[in-house]
Image 1 (cartoon, rainbow, N blue to C red):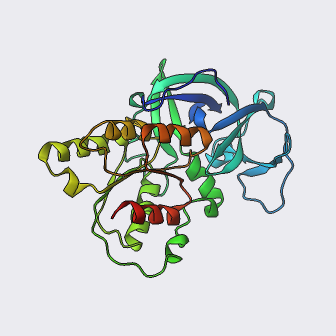
Image 2 (cartoon, rainbow, N blue to C red):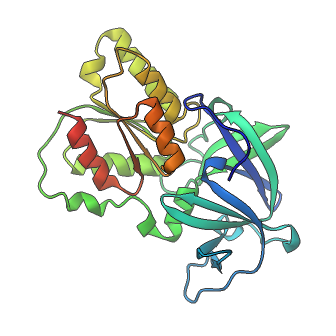
Length: 299
């Protein structure tokens, strides 16, 4: 979706599309959004998941429609004339989300987005990745990857790909991860352990990772503590592009390989990552490919 605003790479900025489900306010990163369309009843699919409302074919692409209200256990719309489809693309999937209204786009920095605390963010159940306070209302940034994975588990991390790599030797090279989703962070760490990488340090956002890297640099232990960095793009406080820029602009950190591992890897995002100096970029389902890339980067 062309919003008319070009966000410079590595500035820690983003655009959030605000929408409604009932009286609640939610948000999605504009980078995931292809277009917004008026609601029209989709074609039902027999034996589909309860949250799949049906399929929709606006042009030449069949798009599955997720009833977001049902996914979030919120009552259905009382005024379908206001309802909209948010058509998205992430993890190489085109998916439409049925929402009850669209409010607009807000340009923010990741520093404006607070992390949910542990009372609402657990590895197994949370669908909130961040919270924004704007003009007296709270906007919850939803974890759309988890919503889709809960509906169709095969769209998530392909952890079975690790088994296809065959016998692996133990590797103690330290790997630092920046990933805000508790569930995905655990899956990535577990997958790397299965692949033989036993020295993995998970951080909940880019800022936490950067603070740790900076401390190691100050202590003179950076090259001992970090041999590879794996980062998501979307994270509260500091995103992965900003983390990549900070690392690659620093002569002492520049040579440490950085892998961007995100659901948002498309042509535009790949160009941004390349311009910032990322050593590799992969979409999140490809955990087997991630291991293969790490094998090549850590010598």
